[in-house]
Length: 212
Length: 230
Image (cartoon, rainbow over all chains, first blue to last red; front, side, top):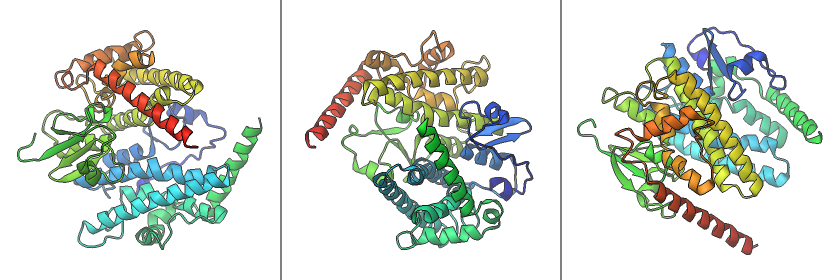
């Protein structure tokens, strides 16, 4: 989404994480994970590190805000998203028992409530309620959270779990609808049913490995 | 420090994350068990130190704070992050590695609940130290610090752990930066610890050991109490 915001053209090489390519292993020897951006032959790893790199190298639409405090707030909540929300909702998908799933759903909802509060504070700190974390247009934190939307759709389809419940997190629910309508989301984000198909593939892989 | 700025740092002397930031007006928080009002007000999300309060506005999470300081006080003193975007990306990558990959396994090797967990933690800790040794070799390119000729972002990130690195041998019988297996890191550790800005703030080994033992006893007591109430 960051590359799309900057209007950059790039070669997208889909990876099969069940059979990792030589290029992936060579480009990210430490973690062997996606994403990896390779710019003029040099690899950059870790999604938020890559987004900041893209923002710094290419001018045009700014992804992070200009002022240091705004940047600190955006970075804090992106780290929260990656460190708290992501493991919780991934845990809903991976849970081996119903009890575990219930606990992970609880953790997910708790994290969403914190983000709801953050959105209220951030969007009101400008001149009235802004549509996005980044203000009038999409920014760093919108991308950080927005990339999970297809997975929230998958959780709804697979387990009937509503990650962003409009009754408890109305601001985020409205934000999610707005974000899904942006050009960048439409261009880049996969459909929830693609996420469902992939999740089932991972579950099958995990079940097969467990049997060995 | 830029004139007129009010900077407060909420911290804990033993926290490696706090140590990364020491240079400002410093408000010691009373042990981990007694979270002061200031802390709860300024970091309601995680209730953790460090918190930097700049002109009344709080910034939390040590890596976020380090970058904030670098950006808000640009031009005052040397930069923590390099100027080149690619080198900045590399520095951020390794800082994330230290916090998200290395620290959790270090913790496992001291807080693991079973012998097996602890042994596994120790094994993984050595593995992460070896990865970091490689990083120092590649980033440092023969220079004294990850940041080159002077200490930078990654040096400060890792340097915050110095008190615990030094105490680890006595506490856990493990040298995280073993001179035989990770000679570059061992040498870096000495060099960083001797820096004028660093030397006075790194906590003494004996104090860290004492603290480590206290925390361990508290953890055992809590586990026993939890077991007894079942």
